[in-house]
Image 1 (cartoon, one colour):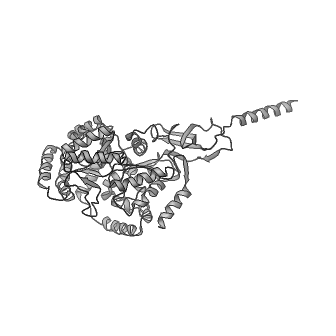
Image 2 (cartoon, one colour):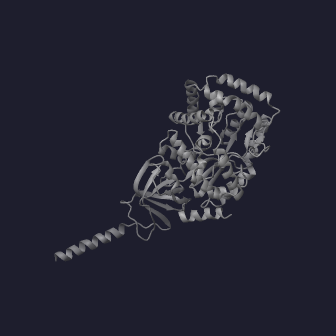
Image 3 (cartoon, helix red, strand yellow):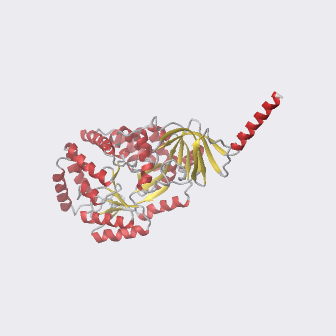
Amino acid sequence: MRYSVVLIIISFCLFHSCTNNVMFEDAVCVQNITIIDPIDGESSNQTLIIKDGRILKIAPSKELLLDPKNNIIDGTGKFLIPGLWDAHVHFDYLEEIAPRMLDLFFCYGITSVRDIGGRIEKVKYYKDLALEDPKNMPRVKIAGPLLDGMPNVYDGSRPQNPPLSVGLATVQDVDDMIESLVTEDVDLLKAYEMLTPDQFAKVTEKAKEKGLKVTGHVPLSMDVISASNAGMNSMEHLRNLELSCASNSVELLSQRQTLLFDGKGDTGAVLRSRIHTAQRQNAIENYDESVADKVLNVLAKNDTWQIPTLALNTARVEKPFVKSTFQESFKYLPVETEKSWKENVASFSELPLSEFNINYNRWLQDMVKNIHEHEIPIMAGTDCPIFFLTPGLSLHTELEVLVRAGLSTLEALKTATYNPAKYFNIEGELGSISEGKIADLLILNTNPLDNISNTQSVNTVIKDGKLHSREDLDRRLEALDKM
């Protein structure tokens, strides 16, 4: 009798357990994984359900018992983060590399990019290509050409200045160009260094009218506070920030305005270089903490975001491209590009560093820490493929330098996930891991909170709910290697 009672109890428990196991039709279930959310931090032993391209449910694995018939991915010992963004890229800088960039970004875990400078027909091609195949390509946001004054810098006059910009002579030219770009579905506008204050004001006025953000370089005819107050939403590379943070910043501005007037007959590239040469070292040597504090307080008040591109800006000193991992990535580029990059890297690495190179490198990293402490939002971007920066891989370098500059690993991760989504006002759809959001995610083999370099340990890319295994990604890379 006692034996029969025990069997009845066991049978009841087994039946009860089975009836509580949940079945999710046509879904992917990632079980027992550690979720690392840029807002909420680390949560271990979680189960995440992906259905119809979105995150359907998240719950502790011990509370969400799955029917074995589900499509279950075992996440034991692995880590889930949002898909990464590179918020500063150029498809139109090196045309021979451009056809490979979407694949390279994707295989390195970059599920979204922000192109901020190129001929509209070139960059829109890649945006449209990504829209046609959203489960297999990173999403692409575009600004179109750099909106520059006259003479414009990126005018195509030499290889290092391809025709990425439009030279605009008048305020009306600015108005007309923006109207044209709006018809091409640009996602933001990029202002450049040769704009006059009146032209820059028109850029920000039209952007506000059209519901677009303005990013770019602070025009050399202006200071940072004036540009921010005029409506600049974000700044790239910290470009020209040093000129406004010096004790002699007023004098430097007056000097720049004179140089701009006197140099109207030169090409934009020559004129800009002359001004930077005359003023950048001077500004760094006269850096004033109290002046900088006033500037950063304005940027914080106006919510003027920063994209430091430290992978680029510090590369002269840090030389990330001499690392074996970077050298290995060159094989995914066209053969002639791989050859020239390796030769140029070897030559460049032998060049001695000046005292200014070292001081400027230190200033850049110190300034990023200062910006972060002023609670000015930062986005991770690289400027790839400029200066030997392999698309995709270079974003991981950017995160490493951000951590060396003083951000925590979680804060650095936020600059490449949640922050870009917030910048584009789509944080309700992307950038963090919560129910209802688009399933753009990475499964990593190692914890990026232990070491930010672990973002490179990509096991699986999930794009719009579709899983791409490490084997799938390697096959895409191998195809590039054989092209």
